[in-house]
Structures are given as C-alpha cells and as structure tokens.
Image 1 (cartoon, helix red, strand yellow):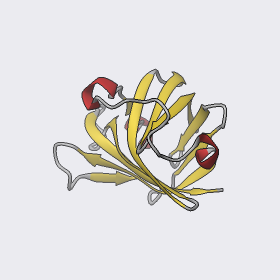
Image 2 (cartoon, helix red, strand yellow):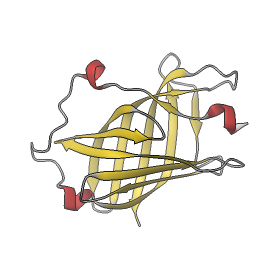
Image 3 (cartoon, rainbow, N blue to C red):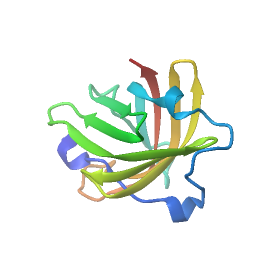
Image 4 (cartoon, rainbow, N blue to C red):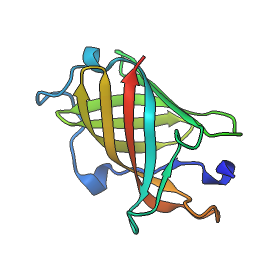
Length: 149
C-alpha cells in the first residue's frame, strides 16, 4: 500500500522566496550536525488540512543525517517497503532548513525549523503525497519532530 504512496519532494525555493545561505542567528552547522530520528513525520493535505498521513505512527521510520560538511542523507522507510534514500546538501538561514537533493530525487525542499536542545522541529516542507492511494500525488506539507540520536 505504501509503495504507491512514495513521497515525491518538489522544489519550492521560488514559491517560498526565502534565502538559503547561512547566517541570521539560526543554529550553526555544528549544532545541527548529527543523526536525527523522527518521532513524528506527518503529511498534511494543502487542499484539505484535515487529511493527514503519519509515517511513524503507521510503523515507518524517518531518519535525517546532517553532516558538518553540509552533506545529508534522508531515509524514509514505510512498513513493507525498502528504504527510500535521498541525499544531497543542506543549508540554513535563521529559521529555514533547505535540503537540495542530488541523489534519489532532484530539486529542493525548504522547512521552517526550530531547534530546542536535542529536538529539531521541521514544518511546512512542500511535498507531493498520494493520500488516497490512487497514484496521483497531491500538494502536501511535511511536518517532523526529530530527536538527536
């Protein structure tokens, strides 16, 4: 079932119009570097915000590894499917994390970000998601709560 619900990230830099360079008082690369595992990874329909899908609650896992070198690996595993591994580079502005994909997908996603101790919250990342399992991706927002491992 989840195979046809694979997440397809879409570029949103132009749509959001936010910069992606470091600076502006946000967390430093050394503060963000590490392995982060999701305790929540939900997709919310833009057209109908009451429509949601939660990967972790459904038995899946989401892991984001941010290297100090600005490389990342983003692994999404849904129950019964092999892991889907995305890789590329990352950058930040004060409260935005940008993932630029170079493997597994191409383009970029931007997330509103907050860091509190060992908890990284990423919200409003524009993605495509097949909520009704009909093979058609709908515009969605991805929200994640991640804990440092």
